Length: 287
Image (cartoon, rainbow, N blue to C red):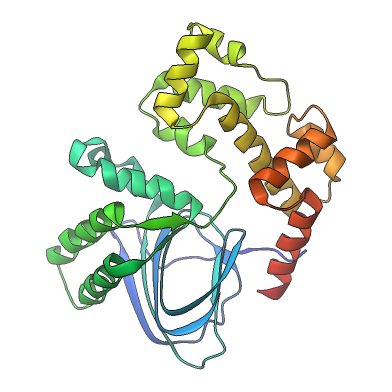
């Protein structure tokens, strides 16, 4: 299987962000990832875009935001393509200002982008014009414009591109609840073992019922859904990056039997584990 290249972005520790305006982009770079967030505007062209395990055709305007380390690539048969790219550090999510009420929508945007986001409709067209305008600004104006664009993206219609929900890392580091962080860390460290609601509730000294309601209120999903999502995502990682058999992966990810593993995996990914491995392999060969 081919490897995903890690790109070294030209942003420095002194930069809030960088913006690159490529009028004649060639789309020659292979599928890659990097620790920075990235907003990509692909304008007046057509081709194919891969973000994570999502592969889609695009035309006219393709407006996508990717979080840290999500593999991505754009390809087009056209000779010239207009691409505007904004890159900024993953550290932005850790800035104290992101915990202030006015910035919470932007914080949520950053967290959601860890699954890849595609923007569409009239809002995307309008924000596209603002990003193009940003390429012409200098000085402090660029900072206020950049934050304004993030805020508009936070409220714009969008859809997620990557279907495996490997969310534990972000909840551990960014949940305002120390109890949720503690539970998520416990789940990740014991993902290959049997994990029950009672285990998690006891960990934070709560009753099963109280903890169940508390977890869903804090994460927007049920405890069992969270655990299953994490197990499927771990399986995706092992299928894509190791030669382990599906049976080995099944038990490494904490599923109690192979048929249950295949059923849950297929429900989440709309393909069997072996089909997923072949899908990822073909993406890496193709791009």
